[in-house]
Amino acid sequence: MALPRTGPVRSEPARVAILDATAALFAEVGYDHLTIEGIAARAGVGKQTIYRWWGSKGPLVAECLLEGRLLPGRLTLPDTGDVRADMAAWLTTVFRVMEAEQRLVLSLIAAAAEHPEVGAGLRDSLTGSASISGRLDAAIGTTANLQPGALTGELAEALIGAVVLRALSREPAGPVDAERLLDAVLGAPTG
Image 1 (cartoon, rainbow, N blue to C red):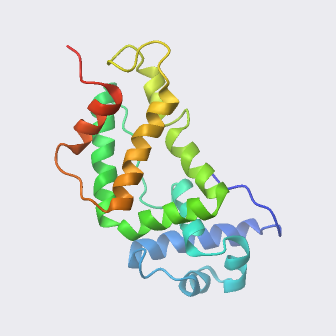
Image 2: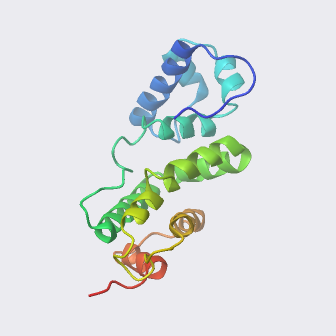
């Protein structure tokens, strides 16, 4: 999902080349060693083109993440039919990614704070109908806080808020943290 833009019109081939280069270099060198200079060289564009469209590597990396170019498949919410187990597995994966890619996560938070369109894109991709709140909507009636009329959008935001707070505090997740978070937000399992 491309973030909405104002300003100069982008060349779609150049945009794709930049996103492809960013994803490839991220996989090769990680976030800490990812540079605008390296991206520009790999994409065959000038640094000024990247800076004109993104301003810094944070929003550029956020766009790559939102388009599924970074960490492919790793952050996808599983769908086994058991929403609680799926959420626990997803949260555990998110916590692992946060520990492995702390600077990436903090950069995404900073980019979202600095650029409203990045924040909106990240929020929509995480809490939109195709993600957490949509899955919670589909699971109405399966757990304590998922009864008819449940505020699933707010429950999704509570889960993401807890994840963001954990990222900001840089506190590593323990083996039962995903389950405890789900108990707090969704209520204890029934049955």
